[in-house]
Length: 314
Image 1 (tube, rainbow, N blue to C red):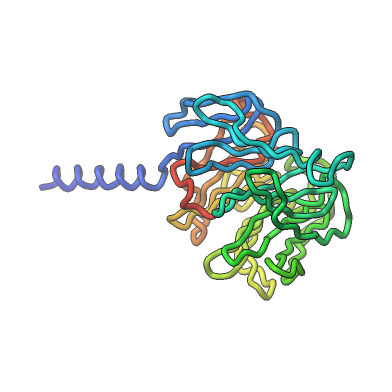
Image 2: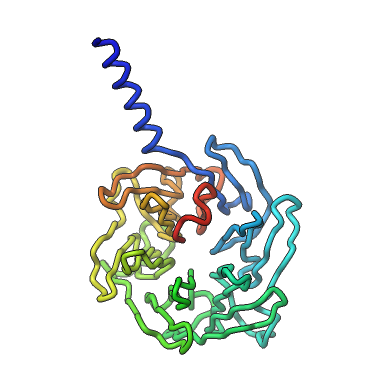
């Protein structure tokens, strides 16, 4: 009887361990280009590519990313050929203007939303490259590299935009284009220049609207993740050294998984620190990390979990 009890206990522990520390298939960008890393750590797909800040996978399996921070391209995963592109620097009135694209989103109707920093607007283009909608952005401190980071169209059609240079999150009404909600990211301590763990500011990189109506914010060089109510009250947060053994540097992408866990992008953190961290938000327990600094380097600013693609909030 004792032997059976012991075996069952060990089995339960093994099951719990496998469940809690489940691994993921990850699509991400690093010094070796775009890669898909399987759960066993092997690379199943790879192609050279420049630095990116946003990445999506379409229903047909193709990958959509930025090229040279100005062009949105769709890549056929099998052939690795670009099968569609839109260059914000040369089309629809932008010729000769300084601009960068840090965020885009393939929409359900087949169009693509693109945030254009420098010219201060969000556009929706169809697959013919025609602008079917334009929304002007409010920018306090205009700069083509810092006007925006990630931006997303919400279920209600509104745009939720991270304004890095302003340190603010703004929600724009779908029809009027007016700012209907704004949140200034707190500055928890004195500013410090740079990109690593020693840097400090309140530059917002990512924001997601949660099911409860609150907003989850990746604070960039604020080294934090915040959950904020519509009334702008912080009801949950993780700061730089709150997770045991982990130091958050430039907090970039956020993903809310179907099981409710959060995956946090930890860019510019340096060797010995994970590039991705999955936590259970209520307990703030770390349940998975992705630490491949030697392979991907210090500039992994965006990622996507393929095993939950289409089901996560990102």
